[in-house]
Image 1 (cartoon, rainbow, N blue to C red):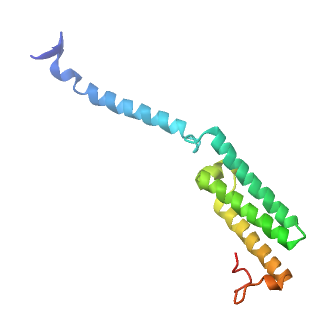
Image 2 (image 1 turned 45 degrees about the vertical axis):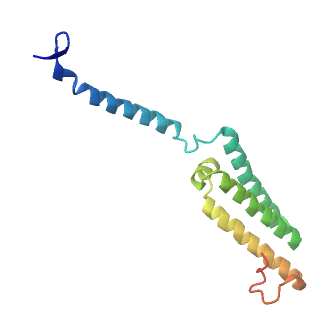
Image 3 (image 1 turned 60 degrees about the vertical axis):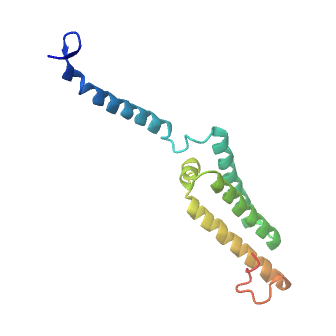
Length: 142
C-alpha cells in the first residue's frame, strides 16, 4: 500500500484538498459580502458624505425655488436643484444614494425636473419677449 505520510494511505487526503478549497472560497466570499453589505462599502466615507450633502442641497434648492415669488429666481433655483442632484448621481449609483438618503432617486429627479419645467414656464409667461420664436410650450430654450 502506497503512503504519502507515515501510517496514512495515499487516497486519504484526496477529499481533504477540495473541501479546504471550497471552505476557503466560501470564507473569502462571506468576508467580501460583509464588507459590501451596506451597498457602499467600496466608496470612502468622505465620498458618500459629499454625495449625500449634494442630494440635501438639491432638496434645499428645490424648497427655495418653490418659495420664490420672482419667476426668474425660481427658475434659477430649480436649475440649481437639478444640477446638484445630477452631480450626486454622477458620484454614486442610484441604489447607493437611495440607501443613504432614503429617497427614490428616479422619483426625486422626475419631481425636480417637473418643477424646473414649471418655473421655466412661469418665466416665459412673465416675460413674453423671452419666448423663442416657434417654441412649443414656451420652454424650448432650456
